[in-house]
Length: 403
Ligand SMILES: [Zn+2]
Image (tube, rainbow, N blue to C red; front, side, top):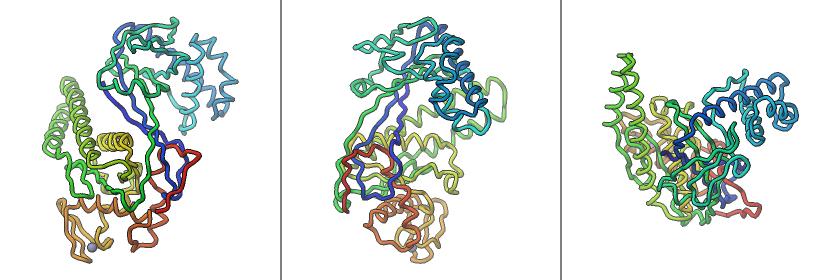
């Protein structure tokens, strides 16, 4: 069983952090295994993939990039040709349009595509969460399911569009998507804690308050050795072992990430602000080039994001440029780093380089809100674009908070 957490970006970016977004939407995915009737699911997933490919081809041929015209053009055709249930046809069209919009050349649909299900149109669940009914090629089919205990507290959340997936071993999983809106009570910037968190390779997270979390260097080095050794062998058995080892490593990192995020969020209280670097800029900064397991950092960020939001802590992202190069005391960039040690050549300040990064992250957010001093005026407008507040819903009554 696995939990996946995503946040939905519903609003356009704001240009000022002084407008308070006080409702955030937290989305949680609960993955539940389906044990019986895999044949009918296998057929349905195959036909659904063919239907999506047909829609992609049609859209590509007629240069259609939007749902409504594609729907008008091929809805009845797809329904007659593939015999899918009405809502599944609509979902296939939506999925095809999304693929076409993103693509530069005509997308090829994989046979292991996931199917989207909407409640109650093409899926339903009994009140006690034990029987799941899904629309398939053979009509509605019922599946006995067991919701793992860890997901039980999500059952009262809002159930949204969910997906059916097939993994490489041919097992079927149903991913329930639950969402909840959390009200974030804003506090004045002067009396809330602003905590910067820097993510790293050897120490997973360092906070601006000099707390160090998750030292996994030994385990990581051992794992990388094992991967290198198995890859050099290149035999079938080595490949199988590699697959098992990556599964074990992923589970270990997820466990560590849950722990680290829980401990960091425990140091915060409602109304505080958690500041992190926006990893979408990951490729542009040399610091991250050597990051081997980017997925693990994204996962840690997601865990931090949803745990903090549920506690009423605002989560904000800043651009990562120069956060590790700048001196957090005098903001000079005439600095050097050596073996995790940071040294400023302008003011002589020395400290752990990850801690310097975390303090810069917190300071940059303070500077955007007008609390910190600013030595490089040219940076200011530049930072503001990436406020963390862009994630979430803006209520129509959003009030502006004067710091
Ligand atoms: Zn300095």
